[in-house]
Amino acid sequence: MRVFLAGASGVIGRRLVPLLRIAGHDVAGLTRSAQNAALIDELGASPIVCDVYDAAALSAAVAQYQPDVVLHELTDLPDDATQIEAFRERHARIRIEGTHNLLAAARAAAAARVLAQSVAWPMPAGPARDAVAELERSVLAARGVVLRYGQFYGEGTYYPETIPGEPRIQVDRAAEATVAALGEATGVLELTDDGTRRIPASGS
Image (tube, rainbow, N blue to C red; front, side, top):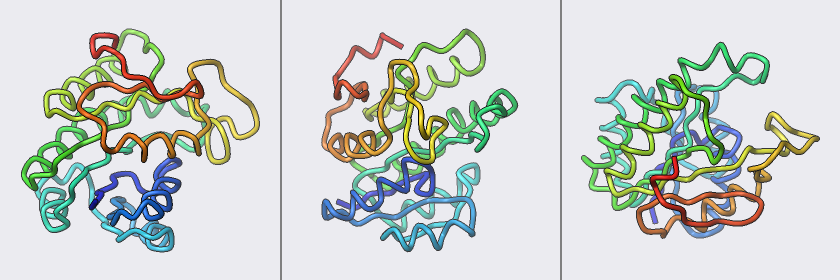
């Protein structure tokens, strides 16, 4: 398949590219940073430098690539976990506006399937929970697949040497499970160290 991977230079994206290539897929990797284009190329994907908030440019980029699958692994989180609170609004924006723009671009390009990153743990009331709910609602409305990951741990994550509380998933295992989920029908999948399971969408 032809896979358009948004967030190809992120902690899971950089693991996904080689796995997708090994599985025989062609991959285009979206990044908003020109500095990351070389990394994406080295990993084996065709780099596409575009801001997800530029809806017209994004739509053109997706249409030009003509993907079978759009894989949404975009986040806007700091490298330092102590700064997460300061990034709440930015991360909420990418979950809402970024997701809407990707879905619109996928629809315009007639992509057969969209899969998008979500979280497997309950969020406290507020903008973060609202953003997750809207991401999931919009993806499911587009007949896509919501990937609810447990907390990542492993190299490059917020838990490089320790193990977080449940739900959790080792980041390499998360990437493997994501590739295995490419053919899944629309719905919600929970990906943790215990495996991948389909759960009711109402369990947000």
